[in-house]
Image (cartoon, rainbow, N blue to C red; front, side):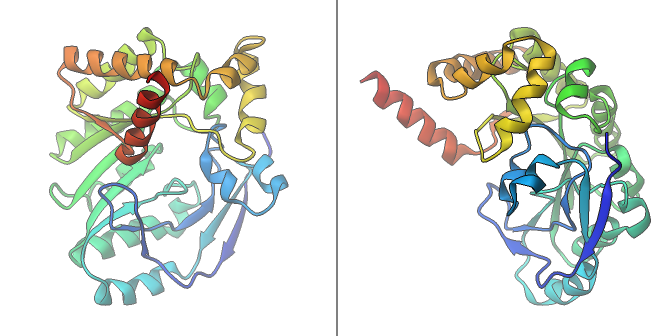
Length: 286
């Protein structure tokens, strides 16, 4: 893998209003991402295709974001801040820059609730700042199988390491949740896959938020060749099933049943999208 290139830019806003469920603002100290998840929707927001195809090989730090944030926390209404909603807030350069660390401290001490989502165990460095009631911690786990994770999320900590993040935070009394997604047909949606991920959530008394894979610009060009490394022809099978509503309905039912059996709290990650999908399903069967 190409060594990650790091760049710096200046930003004009630190807290952005967001329409994401349960969040009022987003705080994204970094753009790009060195983790390089093959399914990441964020690469579709890039301006140039070559940047999208280079996903995972560069990251960008907003070098003045703390200065901007210091002004905004005094002026903007208090609310829930998602850290981060585009790029993992714990890039390796965060060890040196501490944009996320200083940002979450500033937010929490100024009356904002901080909701962190990450794949990185670097978040454990900041446990001294993370307190129950003021923070919740979400960790993305798409599969419990390390061999699949290495293909889908080449530079992420392995699933077991991520599960340990949830356990450590939960021990401290912090609300935790496992983001199970994106769920890709024929890749991480089998009963065995679902049961193993739900059990990881159960271990740490974490809720599960789940979501299906959605096709975005350039993402399939990055994802499908890697899926074919798992099994010849699997990429085409995935492509043919992405918009198969009956397949997703069966998968959703499986997740609901397993979570009920394991007594794990389950929540749809994007309820409005899910409602639109259910309406589409209903219409298609009328």
